[in-house]
Image (tube, rainbow, N blue to C red; front, side, top):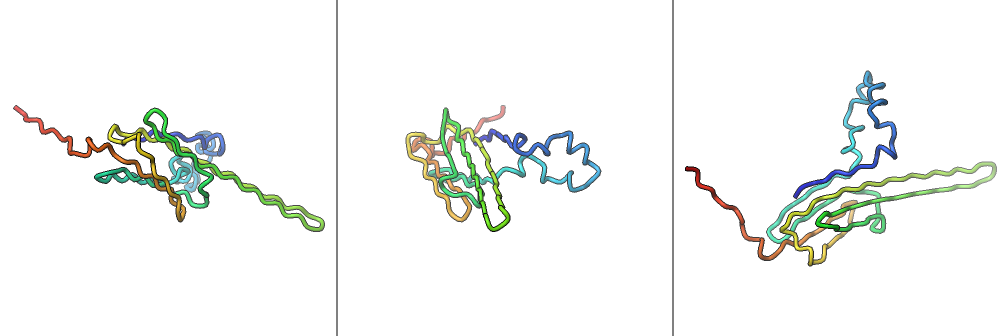
Length: 149
């Protein structure tokens, strides 16, 4: 299974651009992995079983309605977006807080995936889990040994 990276975080977090990282390069904190694009993406596991592929995304704090999962031209797209706004009014003050979090990951699916079957998706305890079934006829080992002469 191959992975196509897509990350629009540079528009949301402009401080991750090279100019600011270079300007602050004397500080060890700004040279850490925190500012790498991959660190802003949810962790992902891909497991291949005999009958299916299992893909997990660690996305705590989201709810089921915050995800959009699509397959388009043999590419799996997983998108998560969460907005939160809280406003508190009392005598003499108003406190308003908001947050926004999003990600998008895309995976090119192998030809062994059966796109005619439904994809099972569950979200529990901060883990989005997808199960993609394999084609029946491609479950066999397609390994070919080539003799060297």
